[in-house]
Image (cartoon, rainbow, N blue to C red):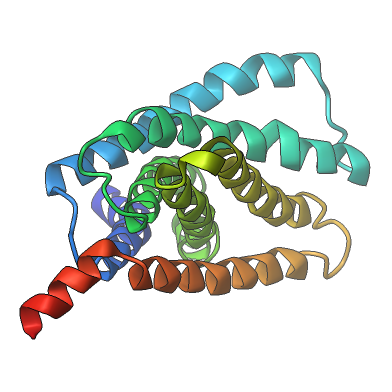
Length: 233
């Protein structure tokens, strides 16, 4: 498999999912330049992940055949660190941008950051482990990262316009992304138990289902939907 083929396989799922969510932003789409910057922030968040995870994994050893150790590893050694690394770019940079002006924008920006992270990670995995790994991740890991981003963005979108509960909703955004990420990883980490990997697939299916609902709910409450309806009338 040549370089360009592997690169295409690695890039395709993240770009496809990003385009899908962009097109779901029906009422007031975000500037392309800002979306590309968000994608880049996601790639940069991998560096934040490395900076945090390196000392953690240097001081704590997680036994691969110990289910409890892998639970701690999945939820705190991986999921929390990765989702926090993405969260800080959305919450403390994109959140303050003037273009973040409706709840659905939380989903858009968090998804773009998540796809930037997942795409860089996917490139590394695909080039290290080959074509088959790229195909497998196209239908598992990358869509999973998309659901983590959408669920995080759903609550950040709510937080932005609910000043009374802003802090709590932002915390929930990080918590739910970490919970789904941790559950997904945990079942893969203990896949030495026969059939347990199905739990990862189930968590992905639930995440996709909730993500579709989150997209629909924020579409329905968009302040720009009323403007569009008035213009049509």
